[in-house]
Length: 152
Image (cartoon, rainbow, N blue to C red; front, side):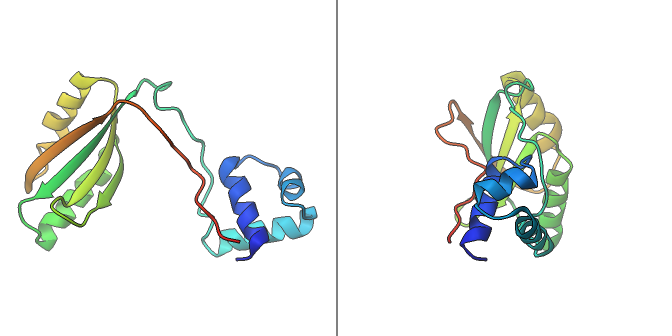
């Protein structure tokens, strides 16, 4: 990747609906080479796809909870069961495998506290092998970005 590829990535992360013409103007490149570079970034797996960024509050899901999970055993079976269950739960937006005293960090979105209680009781408590849960509620967003830092 060179500086032009970095600029292309930055512009597409800001607005994935740019036409090739608009993108080429923003990165100061003619349309054909610009399109060729985008296709190469896609083929290389650097651009994995395109998606709409949806406002969770506008969709009726204003509550964000960071749920830390510790498993009681770290057997392959236990880990696979937990991770498979997480994949099936729509309220879990992200799940990270962590170092330290907690095994996983989940970002969960729900409509309200009653829904979160229901989520914990109906979905999380049914997953076998969980030793402990620790919930932290976000009450504001300072920064949210979809644009990765790029190096020229």
